[in-house]
Amino acid sequence: MKKKWMPMLIWITAAAVVVIAVIYALNNLWGDKPVKTVTAREVAESEIKIPRGNSKPTETLSEDVYALAIYVDTTGVVNLGLFPEEISATADSMRIAVIEGAVRRYAELTGANAKLSATEAKTLMKQPLVDYSLAAPGVPNPGGVPTAKIKDDSLSQFQIWVDALSDVKNEQVQQSIRNGSGIVLFADKNTPYAEVSVVMDQLKELGRSKFAIKSY
Image (tube, rainbow, N blue to C red; front, side, top):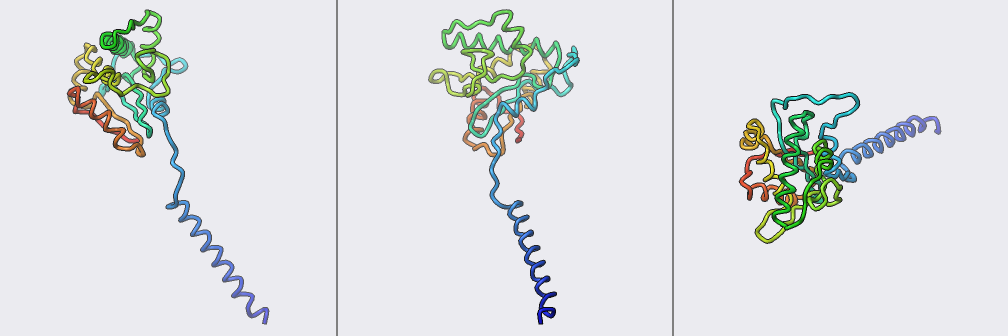
């Protein structure tokens, strides 16, 4: 009798193992998974080209240059990349033009005695990542680039940076900004629309209604 039931018992056991394995696999595929939070800084650092080792800058811009990358994470923190794909002397000079223009506009708007020293300018023009407040240029700010308006009916620091792009005297760059390819907005796929819309609305306030949007 035992021998008669043994094959059936083995078959039932094997079938149960298969069913459990299928359920486990489906749960991994469709079940709830923890969402990995990616900060704006992490994305910026992964996207921005940084000279390494013996890499040497070129003297020309890429054919499809874009001037400003905007990184928005799930909490609404904004970081910027100035000419993030460019490693060139030309990009360095345009980068410092934007940085000095932003610092000047901030000083005019707030009355702050903000001015970059020659040493600070030389350092910052080599750093495409903007993760700081204009109140302390070059010092990483956990809150990234502020998007709150400095005064009622005035600009935010984010808008000051966008406006300072006009200080770049390069027609290739200005044309890319006008046609919408020169500004790219990167948003985490889990970022609430309300956080992204703050940036988009402020771009539109400046007349920058053309820009590219990418998710990460």
